Length: 97
Image 1: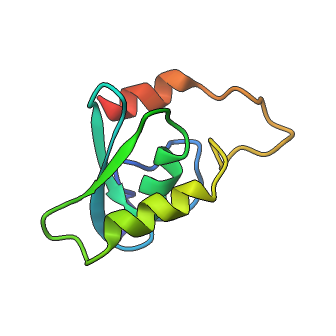
Image 2 (image 1 turned 90 degrees about the vertical axis):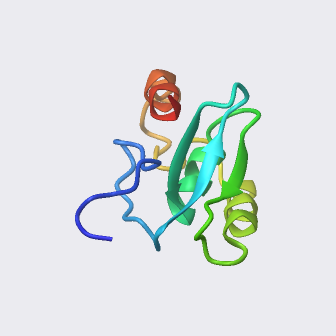
C-alpha cells in the first residue's frame, strides 16, 4: 500500500497496512468495512458479534488468517494501558457504516 491505509484502519491505530485489502468485517447488524488482513483482525477483535469474509480477489485463506489473528488480540490493541480504557466506540461504529 502507499501512504494511504485501508478503510478498516482505525484513526488512532498507528500500524501500517499489511498486504492488500482482502477481507470484509461485518458487525452484528451487518454494517461492514473492507480492510487488509492486519487491520481487519484488529477491527474484528474490537467489535462484538463480528464476522469476516474474503473479498472475491483475496489471497487464499485471508478470512481464516484474519479470524485467527483476531482471536489472539485484545479489543482496541492500539491502545496502551496508560491510555483511556474506553476508546471511542463511535469511531468504530462509524467505520462500519
